[in-house]
Length: 637
Image 1 (cartoon, rainbow, N blue to C red):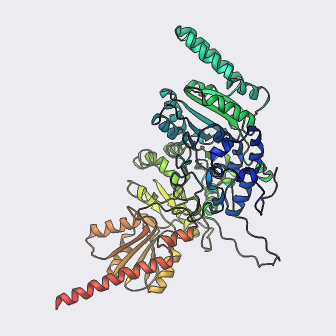
Image 2: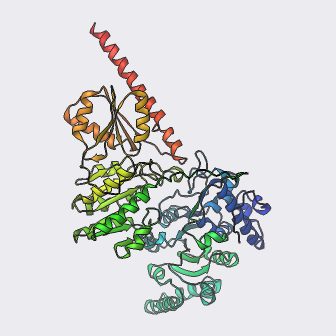
């Protein structure tokens, strides 16, 4: 058991001898516990050097070793769900010495990534996809290839996982699903009879008897059905696997996921079995690191350890800037005090969305629906039908999974559901799977929707209030990270929907800012002597303000942290075109390509959305206009 993160590289000679899983498979099985110890210590050290996801990886050290020991990866396919737990996998598959680059620009991804390694068979960031992907691989592969999906108990709550389980059983293809239960939500204890029974269910003797009985009794359908039901009921008395058996899987478990001997023995037996198999293991998130075992939520991820200063110097206290999810969480509590009809919904993002205090203070009005985004949206729609005031707090990237429900169940019916959309725009080190790059585009086209994009934390609070007061579907999008430090007004007031504000007067150029890029837009504008408008609303647009700015400037520039295609800038272009207004327009936003992981400020600079990038692009466009004007004047003579 470790109680501190190592600051110096630990001595790991056995781990250092493994650059690919083939070398792992050459080890004597008795060496595996020592390998697990060294892998866990190196994982602690490497995450301390780079920061990153933490607890989940510690919990699957033994499982990762056992899977690569028994299966012939990468020829056999190993599909991980979500990807938080794949750091040990990356260490064992040739990326040990690159772990210090984790989640850094140009470095390793925090999730499995097909372009990074042949051992990363499927790119993941969203949960509950592993069984579907693994089944597709099984169906598309030669029969001798083995396919394994590793899915957590949280991810198993999503409907997509059960859709895949149902289809997998229907196909009857050989595949193994490993259910990594690290929150005790399915089985409360492991050991004793349960562990003994799991080993019996996976033993060659039992499996041979089972297959032999099937062959004999299958010619007498009623006898086989009776035997099958009897087996299921016996298992159901001792294990929680009846559901999976009913779906058509052979269930084995629950098994101690930290017992390497049992894992290796069980996986070796299951590898040779035909048809869909499900192995249920129970693990401890943060295993081997005391603080993480005690607080698995708090140690889900870890920041990079900074060097300890030689001399501690007292620094005057600085005001800590609030995070946007904290602004939302405070507003939610304040609003709930005023309106007893407010009901809050989150798909498994209580902590990340800043809802812990609300959940504690208003438990009867809080619904964490687990990883079920589609259900979360339609649940809100149903509540709205009964006169309640639902607020769905959801990350932008996860709202993509509930888009049909947003269209069909909320927007078309014009139901009064407020969406608090967190992690809008780029999200830094978590990379493209978690970026909120598309929400303005996919929401703007929906009838009845109003969409707000606040520029700072006070505006976020006031626009959340405004959206909540609006009788219909409304969305407020805000980024990951901290605000700008503006004073947050405790009193809440409804701002005019579809009205922006001009925050700087200038000449020639007018910058129409949508969202939290207002600060760099103002910095660029100061260098250019440009006008700046904080538009606030993407839908409806402030058409009067656009008309005014178009009439008084040579160039309009839209700025947004959303893909340019179909975003706020496109809305402005559509309006100008419909009005027949002939004014040059430059649209600054996210380009039509995948933006990889890195620090948020570095990513903004890379796509030209920092002050320097905005200034450069605007000057370039002005130069083009000046050149065009000169040519036009020359032609006139």
